[in-house]
Image (cartoon, rainbow, N blue to C red; front, side):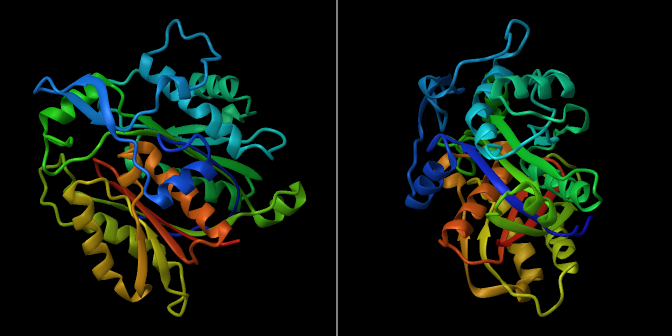
Length: 351
């Protein structure tokens, strides 16, 4: 488990989802409960069209790199990233490292090397990336919050003045959907399942001093991150106890005084499956004294589907935007889980 790093300012936000091509549209749509689930062109085992939450081709920008040797999935991710990464870095001058969450390396998704990915993302989006200090996190759902933890360390130690944290994923991948369908994890056929989605979410982070120096106005502040490991995860032979998320919460709260303001809003990594719900129950009960009794819970996957590695960053983006426009009051807690052992949570306050 890992605890907290000094707080950082959120100075840029970007998102592209099936309910919005930018942050304001996505936030408004999610707050209104707008859903764009529809039958896809991919057939399940029953030879029915899989219900999914994918963007229409006409909403995705053109590919700006040579796609000759690229997998169709990475091409789609590049196109998904275009608006969101540029939106988050609209006020960025100079280059910044990108810490990027991607799907777990277990679906046969063909991706280039980390360096090539970063070079192609820079070319696709027009954002100047510090390629040498960028890295990817193949951890799925919790990967974006793991990246956030490392970004906070980079900033707090002076190794960078600005860092981009993001998540990029799509379930528009026949082999991946076939495996999940075999496991009966997909709705509507599976009773304990999720709607496959896709999204891109990015945050530009800076230390308060650097933000002032660069003229970047913060929209929110992230103060703590906690990380845990669920030994009895979905694909493990060990017993499932729900300890991983509880440990992530405990690690997060361990860096805070006992009289710190209690959590008023939670952005939860629910995706329609029962395991994340059970883990939240365990984590909350073990840390109930840290939450206001009347805390509010948001679960964006109800609107956009499960967006995999993009879900954590997307929830951070939505939480920051809600704080910016005054729709919620902090502290706000964001948590997310992976199919394998990674679990993580972050705490956010108004700027």
